[in-house]
Image 1 (cartoon, helix red, strand yellow):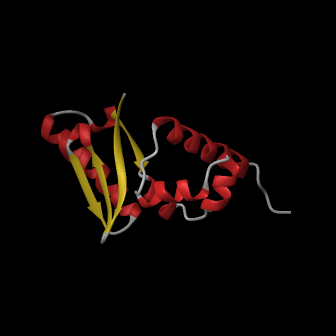
Image 2 (cartoon, one colour):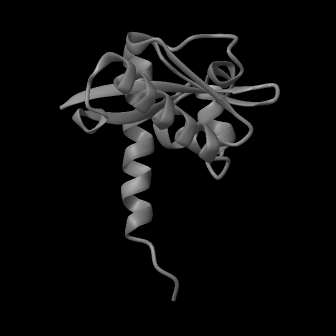
Length: 125
């Protein structure tokens, strides 16, 4: 099965989803709408090219700014302390003033995944 990777970005009037390898761009007002529009655009492209949309898996990826806007429960200061990284550096990644290298991206991604696994263990008393 082939994977179509869409990059989700927040824009002034909503969200975009772009799959560079497939030349697909979807735009919508909300995140859920852009997910649906991206899938519809893939289906339309598959129909035009004679491919089967069921042969494709869709994955959504985020730039730093969009990740922290969409999942605004992640506190930058707490995350930086958890990762042992400078708070202002992570803030610069989020605002786009700096671009993290592959090692930094991997470190942040791993830290977020570990945090998510811990949340799965959470339950109210």
